[in-house]
Image (cartoon, rainbow, N blue to C red; front, side, top):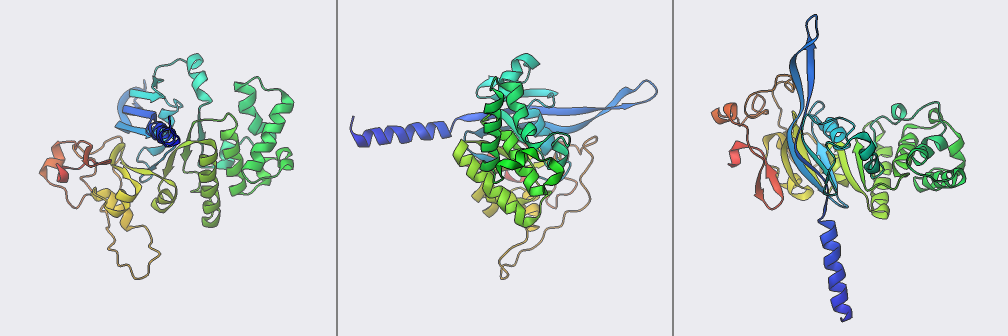
Length: 339
């Protein structure tokens, strides 16, 4: 085999690996019961996630955006089995983990981690930074204490902190530094898949950029896959490869980043993008104002859940739920306007 043939074979193998799906959600539903009456009977359900299907490829960052209450964080927790799905399947590296018991699921835990929105609430204030980072190693591995200490020092330095910071406590750090500690803890077990649940929304804008750049560098170094949850479309554009737009428990649009930002199809996506501030002072962008508030997930509208706020709604939207259909390669939209 010639050198050119070997290079071609290696490139093909790398492309196949990049196209391999690491996480897949298939018709996921998560309903929370509403209790009422003296005997606390179930009188209804909050439909936080309602029939969502998507896949995430190895090495990519899938951005998940939408208003507060759209079900983004709930979906993320269901994928990690922090919440049990009401219906549907969660498939990680080809294995259905939706119905695994805690003992069998433990083997997968170290491959899937999460970085929470509020770094102060997610870090135990009574534990030192070193203890926080070493705890996953203590629970999931048989690494010795000196090795755990060394690994915690290396992880702190990797996220831009100092070795002697391991003796300090979370309250001694700024918000950005605490989020770096959370990222170091998530990396401790060398995971393959990390859910970033609005990791920069509680930080100043200048600090946001630093943390996002850090996450991008770590992704390249550790070959990580991210599900990046956010409500800020400008943040998602900076870090994502593909973007999924979620509204009231359903996926409204899913597309590669460039296609979504340059050619949004769903009326909800267009409204979200119109509200993003532009750095080009000469650009004239018409702001789309949505009428009313986000409906309650306990009583969502019939048919298309966006119809009560959509300026393009028609009779069919009242009775039929639009399917998530592919309009062009990789660009999916759930809207009757395109059927």
